[in-house]
Image (cartoon, rainbow, N blue to C red; front, side):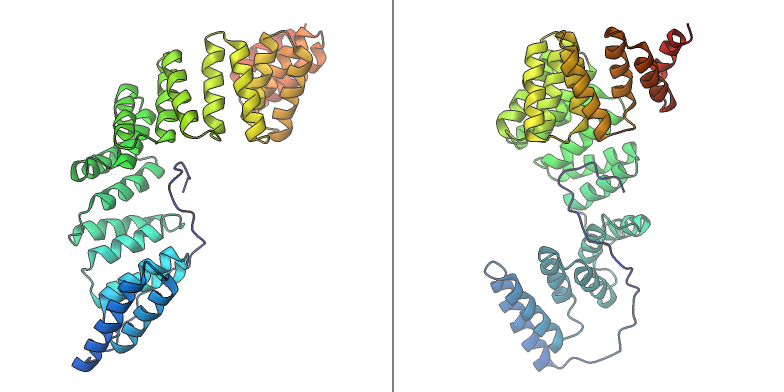
Length: 349
């Protein structure tokens, strides 16, 4: 599943846990009371010590192995402690005890969001809703699942359900904006990114993405303004510096662009995209020797970076190295850069 969202947790690889039949049993009233007492102690311990809370929930289940809420809550604690397999097992046991436990389906699906068994994630999120757990975050994560599956229209439907249930849900607005952007609805995307920052004013990623949509619309100054806010909110946001530099480049502010691209290099010296931008900017400033160095670095970091090869070919041509230019254009054309093909005719003369 493609990782396009900064706020999705990265989980360890999972194994599939298949349901087991629970043995029929009667839980004594005394054991139920002991289980309830241990469960309550666990709830009281969550804020202070998750490991202690985990022990209490386990004790509750020792007294009452059919305590579905204890399985669910222990699963949530295991999630917080990064015990992913144990969490999934707990959510599965909660479902085995109570097959209509919508919240348990949701958390099992959520825990599996980065699992390869994508159809299982979708099934669990659907089951959560079908069993009455119709919370905004359930629609949000199902929308996120669809977004990661390139079902942009379906994701918009779910994100819309999420914001209708919770109009302050910034991430739902943000990701709906992303789905709209991917569908080419740029004005709709700007609206959603704006709603996201209205609800969460320190949302640097939303400002960055809003700026990138404005680039598509040719509003370079508006994009610069948004990128500047993103950078003010997060001074280490190297992608926002790179994007702002690109907008400045389009406006002919090559010195301003150079400053931003150099800042990216300081923050993230293995970010290969910036070296292509840096090379183009240095070429505009007639500094071809440093432009070649920057484009060399771009290709060194990503040897299949066709655009950098195309641009390096241009600079080599300026320097009179037609053979070197032709080599770069040939490689770029082999990588599918259509623009490189037209320049190869110069190599045949």
